[in-house]
Amino acid sequence: MALKKSYFLKRVIANTKDFGTVRQRIKKSNRIYLGIILCWVFCLIYFNPKLFAILNETDSFTTKTFFVIFVFFLNIFWLYGIFHFFFLVYKIFPKKQFAPDKIAHFPSVAILYTTRNDFQKKAVLSCVKQSYPNFHVYILDDSTDETFKAKIDHFHHAYTQQTTVIRRDDRRGYKAGNLNNALRNHANGHEYFAVIDADEVIPSDFLNKLIPYFGQDETIAFVQAHHEQNPQQPSKFAKDLSVGINFHWDVYQPPRNHHGFVIFYGHGAVIRRHVWEKVGGFPEIVSEDLAFSTRIRQLGYRGYFVREVTCYEDFPETYYQFRKRHEKWVQGACEYLQYEFLPFILSKRVTFAEKLDVSMSTFILFIPAIFLLYIFIANAVLPMLLAEKHTLSITLFGQTFNLMSAYFMEPRFEKVWTFDFYLITLIGMFSPVFCYFGSIFSRPGKIITLLFKSAVPYISLILVCMCGIVSYLFTRKAVFHTTGDKTDGCISLWGCEGGRSLKQLNSNHPLIFHLEWLLGLTLTYFSFKTMNFALLTISSCLILSPVIARFGWDSKAVSVLVTIPLFFVLLAFGCMGMGFLGIQGFSLYFLAFHF
Image 1 (cartoon, rainbow, N blue to C red):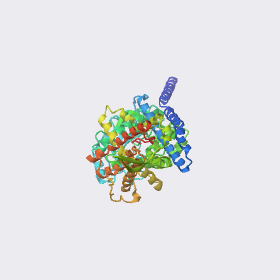
Image 2: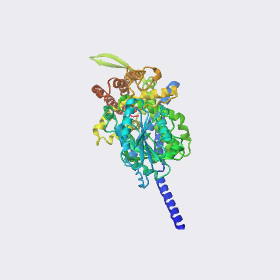
Image 3: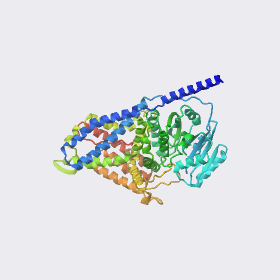
Image 4: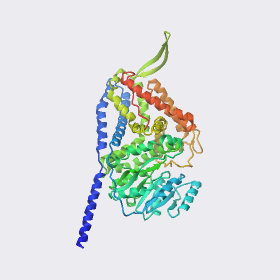
């Protein structure tokens, strides 16, 4: 008996040491975010006094107010430029991830396949074909279309032993409500569960590779798998832009195991059931994944990201779906900030790096709206308040012809436009896309296509973001738009049934498209009035957005037109260089096309 007791104690001590070792390896560090903040503070201390020195010669309260707002927005853009740069450096010098031990016991796992009018046989088949010996697939069907219901029933009849179909009478709580309903009323007796999206294809060893991580540390509540774009998507829009998915997962997720906050992305992850029970289920809001992640962290649990397990996910198939998805993210972020953000920030269990990571990852969704305000202040208001008005003219055969009046920055601005300011501007402009250049030799066609064609879709998010924020402020309601819903018809420029009402204002409403081309023409006017041709990048994207909506991404003419803004980016780069050399004094900060 003494021998058995001694052996048992030795095993407990050994396991405790193992947990301690693993916990040390996944312990959060503040180094990356401390570096980001220190670099940012240095920029503020170094550049802001030079900028504010411009106001020494003016007493106008209006001018000072708008200039302070301008500098404030500029500081925000610097912060996010440095943020992207630091994560890219980590990508170049990664930290080795720990590998879990193999397991002899295979706990029961429920695979929850969520779908709403977007059933994909290949995706659910990847769930059924798992090599893991102890699992069951639950098809959580919120479909409203009988065609998709019939497809799901047909699949279930072919795999009756491995699958169960769960339907409910309403869509209360959106995706979170669907998951909670399944876990509370149907998928009982499973120690873990996996959440899989309708378009997601998981590898056959998905469970075999992820489950062992839970045995390394009891504080790991979920394990999030890596994702890449689905290479077999037929949509031209997806083929042109989807490679960006890979860089998001490759660059920004691995560092978060040690230097930030690992977020459950709502799919492609395995979760401990008892942790889900502790937090009372998934919060029934649009951003249920982020809310769940921050709630469990306040209880002392965390997530872990596994780069070695790759799932495939679809990119939005159409321009409409792309805009709809971002609107959902923006409204979800608004709702999260209202209900979930403050308790997380005030929690003593959460580290400084995690709080800052969640804050920056959430507020980055609002950058397009901030940019909309910024470009008007920087390119319309301030030039009229601070610039000198001149008349452009041309002389032909000894006769002078007046063309138009334009605003040129005063000579005092030349003191600001130095090489160091030029450098921080370039970092702010291009740091979000630096990661693409590293793969340009391995996938030149994909990367070049992405760089040339992504400007219009991403810059169009300026008004999409503003629409989402305004809509939420007025209604106090976030709407869960299912990106892949095949029955959700596209709203054309001329509207569709039920699409004209202002009460149904959304990112694809005809009014938003009309506002885009009107805003584009307005910015084009100011680009010529201030001789700031960098602004043509923004204005041309906004003008082309309704063109895409009207004629479609597959149009040959559209394929050519959407490449035009990149040439304006290069022109902007050249103009800034000329500004540094003293030609046309001062170039106002221009943010690159990935927000």
